[in-house]
Length: 237
Image (cartoon, rainbow, N blue to C red):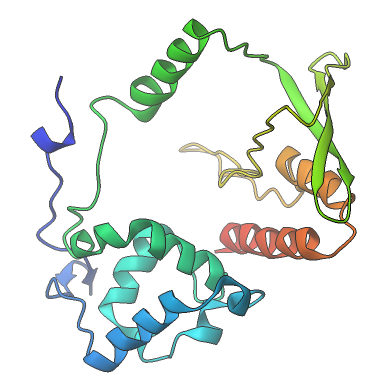
């Protein structure tokens, strides 16, 4: 079976300007002071980056470098996005930094990701006895919030006909929540019709809002606001 190692990705030019002229020299063009700034940024505790934008933490000099252009274009970051999210991304993909100037960091499956990964995982999980409920939407997850812990007690769900599909939970159950999607509230167009600008929050935001309503503190609600700002900002851009 072939892998991405048999067909590696490589680009001779990463950034162009002036209708196709090459801009970059395949280097980050970072001086020692800026490298030190990145290292210090990665060393900051998560708590220190709460509610801060990238431009609140990183210097204007760093945000003008080719390194930042490579990074932001690879991972869809804007200067006003979450500094904490930026740090978590860098921690996750730091081993691929060397491949940013030539796109050699990109890895591809033999077929598209749905066929190569999703369908294969579904088949494997079904063979292990996992049950998939299609045409079902999770509306809420009800929590019991105590002083020292939060316990999910019920998954509130319904099918596309409005039938209740809720699941009662115990402390021994594990609940994994996909809390959002980068394509939520996106619109599609074609050669003759522009994509609609959908401002209304979709089902992922409904789930976030309902979960946040259980919070006795504001942490979940703050994250909801930050994520919603980023989502709407991406739509505007």
